[in-house]
Image (cartoon, rainbow, N blue to C red; front, side, top):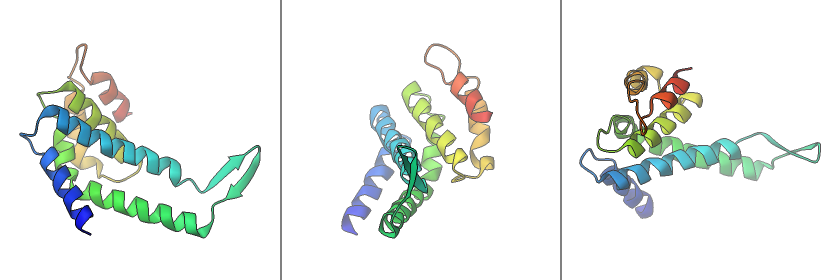
Amino acid sequence: FDLLQRCSEMFRSALRADAPAPLKQQAVMVFVDLLRSEEGRTKPSVIKKGVATSKSSKEINAAAEATAAISAALQQHQTSLIASALDGRSAGVRHQALLLLKAMLEQGLVHPHSCIPKVMALELDAGERGCAELARATLR
């Protein structure tokens, strides 16, 4: 429990509005990686050489617990993560936050009303390091 509390505090500090941009980018990237890894892990069956094999109940329970933990962390830091999409200091932070918002929308982990306005604003983030193309892809 102590480790979980320290990790939560670490993310809270890294996602503050005044946190250094590289630290914030790394924190958002961790959430993107966690979501992507969970997406692959929670598939109901694995196909090996044309034969579908079911996962054991132990694997399914472990995957469910991991998914619940990640969902709880996302919900706990959701406001800061969504606000990161409009971080004017770093295109990298905006890009990672937009990737996270896209994954959260695809998996139904966030209500579209809370993040679609920010994604629409990022459609105007044009230029070499902008996120306009990714924002348009997210809205599709």
